[in-house]
Length: 166
Image 1 (cartoon, rainbow, N blue to C red):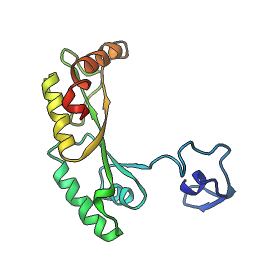
Image 2 (tube, rainbow, N blue to C red):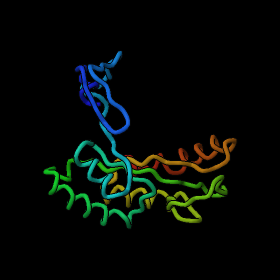
Image 3 (cartoon, rainbow, N blue to C red):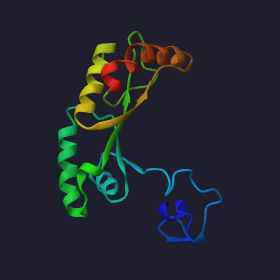
């Protein structure tokens, strides 16, 4: 991808596809292409993130998980000759505003616990930040017709918190 984003003709031969002399019709606005975020919570995903990515993107990570993940990243980084502090850490989290029932079964950790409040969600986001998470995508598992109201609640009660924006 980086070769294609760099507007160079590219060849590739892999397990599922191959091409020769490929180019992109439109190059990215960001020179060299967008930053690569490599997702997944496995050791293999962490290794790929360190080898190829600018960021690692975990899913359903709690603050309690991060010391172990950081240790794995540090250990793997030695083997791929990369400074682990150069890898940005990001995650995705479920967040269920008060008064809502989940629209789907929540198999992963969600911010603020089973009976989340604005304070518990903010507190957990701050803990993620303290452990090095620089971005957290929020998934709101409520029925589709409740999404606008749930987003408004998050915007009014959580996302504008001054301690999250500094």
